[in-house]
Image (cartoon, rainbow, N blue to C red; front, top):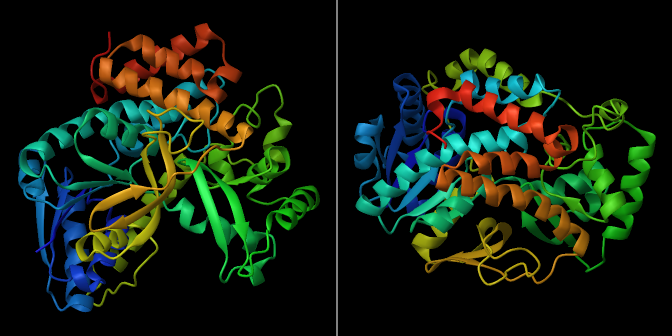
Length: 441
């Protein structure tokens, strides 16, 4: 029997997608699913949701168990074959609020704050100590398990796990699956969707659509570049930052414009406030989403937790496909976050966490060699990788100076604030986080 442990199972909607997918796969219908969380109410809600899906689409064949709190964590992990990670340390209140409100006092505005920027740095610093505990327990009770990480900041957390723990880890994000599809739809090129072939590589949330051809092998990029420029000139829409990337850098990237607006020094600039409207950038987008999700949870709870007829259709999330491929030895391709060992992408550092095509089968996860990225794309990635590597260094060494370094090197933060302001802001953030962070010296 395959055992799947889900860390952060109180994320009920996401647990439905990933675990509901697993219950939809023949090779996994008799699996044991262990739900782990530190919130008793949310854990119970996810259990009720998953039990309903298990009954309704799987004839109750799977075994579903729950584990609450750190004292039960080892039991949740014991003998697991796969561990899915979807935790959020500190939640919206207080930690996301802190990540946004403290920088605002210095005039630093963000959109999402979960991947890069000062928000991404702080989220990583409070999450890595928890992952360190997970890895320590896994090494003891399930040393051969695969750790499927969905938690942001993806590159920093996955990079930490791969460099500083012995756990077999891959980072998973949904932005690769929908990248070329959504681009073609946005540009009115739906007729080129079926049978298209693409190549995507780079880093998480800034992996590049390097090649895209239609079913007949025709290169679609010339038409994409032409239409993207025209669309940005003629209308206001929600993907203007990435379309500007196409114009200026020549290529499209995986994650949304609201994300990418804060990964670079070009768009959110206090000296040029008109850029916010010009590129339709939604400042404070993530806190707004959190508030709306909290407000909407009562309705969702009825749909997911108190619905005896709840069903599920398999989604595009990678987890169930990876698990099925490893269990059945069927080959499957994903876009995965892995260590750049041996120079999978030749012009990025070997210790960087990169997002590249990976082949999955019974032997595990095998990244595909890419070669060199166009120099301007590698340079864009490096501005982010610098922050990834220094943030990991801060988390591992517990040296406060490296938090300062990471914030100084962050493209958006460094372009807006002086060094003295950055240091004061970091100190304020550390103080505001209190016990959510370990002690830094």
